Each structure stands twice: as structure tokens, then as C-alpha cells.
Length: 125
Image (cartoon, rainbow, N blue to C red):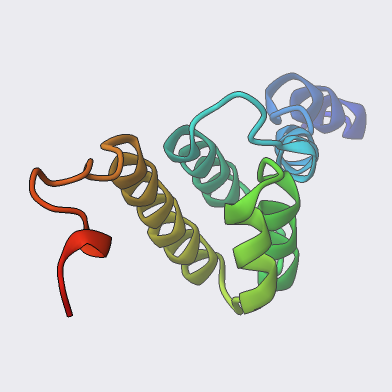
């Protein structure tokens, strides 16, 4: 029979090093930075899914996601909605990003120029 210290040595050799602690720290410190929204969301989802022994509660997931977004209209919109789940927050942000892209695309086309013909002021009433 092996002595008691043998088990602690085996545990130290084969037990994963506090990886969930490291993953939790990465999750709590995650910021969008220069990443696009999709990459930020994927990294966030990966970290949440990797923490299984003591999962992060939903309120912390949502707050961390919201805090990590880049400042701007998308983040401002999300703070006005108060989503209750991470997936609801992600969905709202994706919808808002789509709306912002559509608005930018529409505004970049420019406003139609004047139409040839008499000016409205020169037409008799």
C-alpha cells in the first residue's frame, strides 16, 4: 500500500493547474478592444462554456459582456435595454450593429441631388 504523500504527489502531477481560475480571470477582464463584435462574442462564449465546476452566474455574464463592449451607440443602446441573459444581450447587440451598418450604408450613398426642371419658387400657384 502506498503512503499518503504518494496521492498528493500524483494529484499535483496530473491535476490541471487552476485552469478554471485562469479562465474566470480572462473572462472578467475580457474587452472588445479592436476586435470585431463576432470575435468578441465567440471568445466570451468560449470562456463561459469552459468554466464548468463553478459556472459564472448570469448577471455577471451579462454585466461583463456589457462592460467589455467598445464605447459607442451599440453599448449605449444595450445599457438602455437591461437584458436578463447573455444570449439576449448578444442578440440585442447584433441587431443594433446591423442597424448601425444599414444606417451608415444608407447615409454613404448620399442624398439625391436636385432634379432638372423649374424650381419650386418659379412655378405659378
